Picture 1 (tube, each protein chain N blue to C red):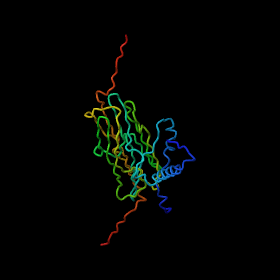
Picture 2 (picture 1 turned 120 degrees about the vertical axis):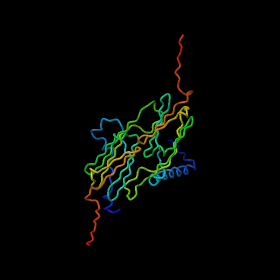
Picture 3 (picture 1 turned 90 degrees about the horizontal axis):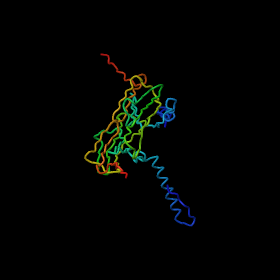
Picture 4 (picture 1 turned 120 degrees about the horizontal axis):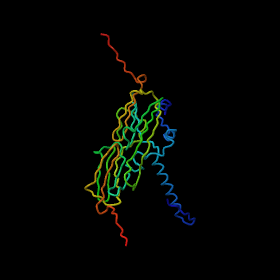
Length: 137
Length: 148
């Protein structure tokens, strides 16, 4: 792998470390990293994250100084006595370092069927520009 | 886990050791190359609760809608089938792909009989919730104990 492509990698920052910040230290809810897909083209990045059982208003997406952080709170209706439990109420958390500048104001988020979809357009300055060549008549 | 007792006089022991080493090697190999095609975790993960009158099953099915799920119920079991397709957007390069596409079929044995006709299900925010009312004969009855 060339050095150039390496510097363009999106780094995942240890979510458990990030989640044990002061604000979360009193919480007994476990923090888990949701599975994520990240795609890129010349215009921007596309991020998908599986957040089953989360309400749309319990999702927090932040982009600051090249870091994209996702957090979401999942509360589960606790009806009856558990017979078998393979998942539980958790805080989903994931932080990524995005190598290129993103136009923070233009980030778009959508939540459907428990999947969060983020569009992060690259800052105009780094987007390839197509220059129209005028033909002189 | 089983524990293996070493018998220095057992000539077949070497084969057992060889087999365990090979199993270990295949598991390692699976970790490296097999993660996409062979999900090692169960999918979807489910929770089952008992509310005395009904069982409530929840399953994590992110990305799937009602039309992608095939749910069938008998008096004593429930089966979920479906497929989650990998939808890589066109014209993009991939940085990471952790949300795998898969076909799944999962059966859950119910601890008591349910009333199949009255089972209901809904999908909300990637969570399937199935309510399975218990068969009238299988509902717990509280018995008054008479004293003399």
